[in-house]
Length: 163
Image (tube, rainbow, N blue to C red):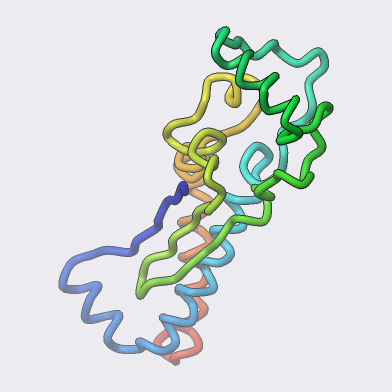
């Protein structure tokens, strides 16, 4: 599993402001979190598969990996050529989730191999064919995420009659 979180923090002044209109703000923060998570997840190389490259870089294999591959092929555990979403697929693209916990939005993927594709343990080969790290994309999109949250908070303030 791989995940990142966006958490709104601040001092005493922010806490007092949040207490003034908790319902409106909670709704706005939830909406901002959903919109921000889509902004990150819809980046090519995160949820969208990277553009196919031909010829693809060769994946280096040790003798042990090669023997394991052919043993699984003979046993019928894998198919060649690989078909995305086939019988052994964990459907990576459908394993994304977004959860809200108070003023925190958590985005992640439950596929058992997510860390090797988009996480901190990303395999060099996956990076070479276009997969991006989830946390790096989120950092790259920080300005956009701040604008999204600011827009939703401004709406909440206006709806609460405080502007």
